[in-house]
Image (cartoon, rainbow, N blue to C red; front, side, top):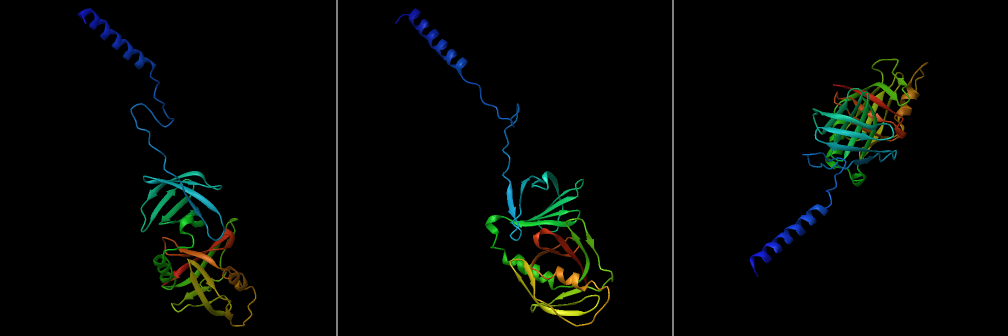
Length: 249
């Protein structure tokens, strides 16, 4: 092959390579991708369900923040703050906070618990250690009824301060006082649900007593938790409200 043929062959190869390069499709750019930056995938939301009401919500966790998705809270973003245990996230402007520990979350609106739930995989399989901690905290003090906050914004407070008291003992007994009578019975904690038996009571009559109203709040099984301030919170059935007790040391 002479030099002229070699030159023409080389030019032909370069031309073909140039045509292939010009015909190469442009790389697809995703909406989240910008020049000079890698496309960072969005983390999947975690769904939590209340084992008692069936209500669900989901939370997307990322570095130092969480986003809450539900019918009540539409993509509320919360910043992570310091917590004694678990992880706590707060949106000060909305008065919303979220506490996450393991497979469980609790949502607060202005310090009132509005939701407690756990992941589907953990429902019916609680951590026995956590249940034991809850029971130990329950029996560590006597508890005074502070107020009941209903989800329709009604607030019920005792007319007689320091009258309504609950005491749980480690042997499964519960006792207490109202603004009229003393009472006693048994209690059980199973899978984080507190159930109190029908109370035996003294039989005094007191005009204007809130005794019946107080008894009704304790008549059905409830989930319960403790706030950072050490208060005991009983969550009423159907997500209707919360009964709040302060500790008596």
